[in-house]
Image 1 (cartoon, rainbow, N blue to C red):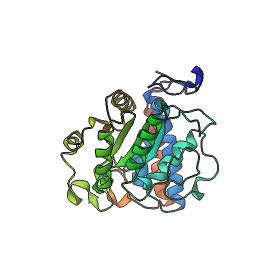
Image 2 (image 1 turned 30 degrees about the vertical axis):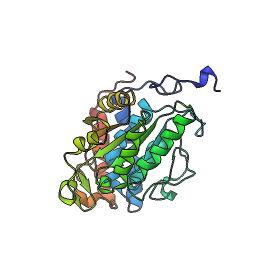
Image 3 (image 1 turned 120 degrees about the horizontal axis):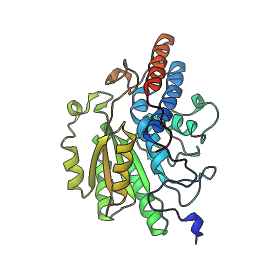
Amino acid sequence: MSSSAEQPSRHSPSAEHRPVGPADVLAFADRARLRVLRLAAAKPLHVGPALSVIDLLATLRLTVLRDRPGRPDWPDRDRLLLSKGHGAYGLYAVLAESGVLTGDLDRLPGHPADGLPGVEAATGALGHGLSLGCGMALGTRLAGRPGRVVVVTGDGELDEGTNWEAAQFAAHHRLANLVAVVDRNGLQQEGWTEDVLRLEPLADKWRAFGWSVAEADGHDPAAVRSSVTALLDGPGPGVLLAHTVKGRGVSFMENDPGWHMGRLTAEQLSTATKELVARAAARPQVVGA
């Protein structure tokens, strides 16, 4: 049995995490964005999907998830799965900014790979992350461990039927230690999600499967944190529909499906960098909250 020192409260991040406020999270996220942009200037990658999800990943990692720095295999950790694996460089950048990943990110694969620190499962074939999360959540509960599981999916990814099989499974087993976060940016590779294959009314669909549902601005760390925390306190699985902007933070990329994948020119990198630096300078410098 774990010692009392190994038994954190159900919802608070690890004691090793410095309390951070929304401004801190957004500053962290923009530093991660700069990492992605520099990589996208060196080679083509899924830059738009990475930029839309970074605020979510940063918020979850800094304010919600429990872990132990230097102990990626800590058995009571919370697990974060990026089911929309094409956003891998967003995850890599957040892990690098956290000090979890070191070395050259440009050598890493375009989808999360097993064996990398902070990567709980290989993803990329869309629609399987939630099923993996269900297995982890059920296994954790059966083992009597306190860990929670958060699965971040894309909205276009919800076209895959395996998501809804997993949703049914999670509700049946009342997996209260499982939350799905949908990166609801409204776009997928082929265009707007509602034109490709209509998802709405999306909240009603999740409720019909027996899930608790919340909606929030996915670029608002306080709203994301409070929503996910409340869902983890529910009687069964919960889902946050996080409304985001594809290509967030770079004006010429935002809401442009052409940036689902691409490579930046030197001029574009300069413009994007200046925008992020200007945004950071205009942000209130509040540390802690």
